[in-house]
Image (cartoon, rainbow, N blue to C red; front, side, top):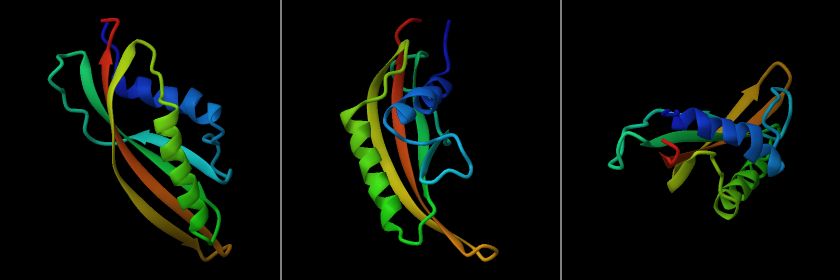
Length: 131
């Protein structure tokens, strides 16, 4: 049975990898936190129907006027992705490419908060091994 690479990778990051590596990823009011979601893309690659690139975005979110906290967490996250690769059951990760980062600042006039965020884009190529 063919399985969807994107949803499997996303679930593995949300349910296991992020919490196992000490990142909060499950609360709107929790800071700092790291959210992860699928991005566009996902074209078939040359390894056949059971291989596919998956574009994901990590969203590092802090409630701090100093953008340095978001940058520090972002750099730490990128290092952990290299040092402790994600394992997706029934798939091999053939390649991981960091495709860019985008810093964002949100200011809320109602309560004088500043939210600093860093979006980190990755492409993961996954091949299903239990086809």
